[in-house]
Image (cartoon, rainbow over all chains, first blue to last red; front, side, top):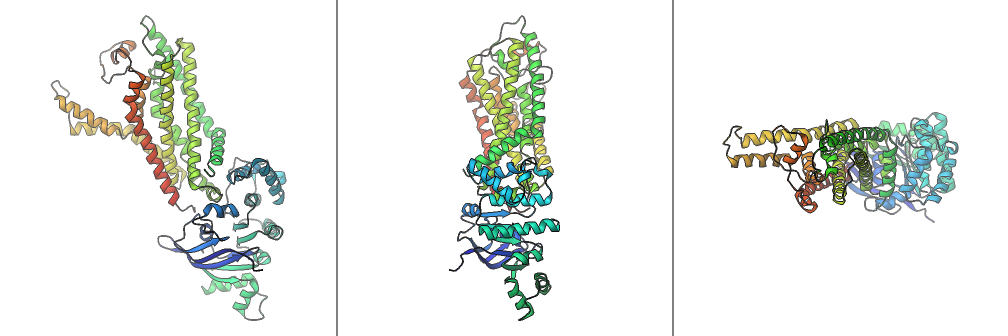
Length: 250
Length: 319
């Protein structure tokens, strides 16, 4: 059976006054995969994610998420997509459980079920003992994991993770990446992962896409990209080498 | 409405548990004690040996003690409460990185502003009500006059108008918090507008009126010019929500008010009776008098909200 297409964009374009942030973007993500969404800062990754969530209006082109148009069906899309923004913020005077409870309320998860889920996701991200600690006292790594917990609370079909490993120590980054992989394998959540930790991305991604200056310059499995850039039999090249090669060419 | 309830509950509990609210409440409590004491004492002194005027109880709120009355205080400083509660509503969330997260939940975008506005309005209602209660309580014991049914009704209407008035400023503050990215800028902008509308407009009104229709100070001024002068002055003053509010509440809490001023030196009680009608305006008639001002206040709030919506809906949420 063909895996279902989760994300599909056709000619997706976003123009601001003087610059084009996303330039006729075409790519797709299929069910159950981890798609590494790579590119330098300012390449238009976050803008793309916001358009896929219906939070930003495309200037041209279309996108669908699980067959839904995010522009018209923003509510339905936001129900099935969990989005962890870059540099996610929290209400400092709330503790972890209160933060999660607010997210649960916003998603209209009924009270008793919400408590069960909160308990479950806190355990999952390894914050079970920090439930009543104020978020302002959390370390960066703990905050990122709490962010993932908030995303998981709504039991999403798809997760958009925007630079979840940014600013984490190597150990924290590895643990977070492993968590993402286990969520993908055990729960079948499709993941769109944007990150600069290329080594980790390579380890867990089924396919990667490299976005530079608003365009997707390459998309496919790491081996396929290596073959394309360095020739047959050169599949051993790392994602980092491939990425640098594309980056220098543009 | 999707998400409105959740945002409302969260914002309300934020409001009541925040340090900001504690400071506001301390300030308000202090002011209401002072006002009730001042008004109560001077009322008691002045009432001695004078036949009891009608609506004594309402005088607790409208009578100047040593400094100011509650009605004046709310007119001048009430807006600050609204501003303080709303100036960082949206850009604060933006600065903390919580706005994108909030909007990526399955809620409508307007639920965020509506929830925040309603939570702020509820907080304002609690504050205003508690001030009026404190003053009433103190007044009862200090002056020893029990309010009649009509007085209670008038007070209720006064409380309602005051909540509307302060909520208008809350709406304005939220509008600024949407329009400006920086919290400091939105606070400064709203305070600047408050100062301009509350103090400079009334000053400007007389300047404009006097330059368009100058009135001779000496006797023999042309009655038509005097009327024109007064009309222009009132017209320009209508730009100021404070002026509108003062007019809207005037005949409600002070049913015997006349607009003419007396300059002859008199005792406070005599002064009160000379600047007022002999008999109070009935509640219905009072409402008729204040109705246009009330409508203006509501219209202003709605405009403010409409602008907030249109900006917020079109705005790119990226920081």
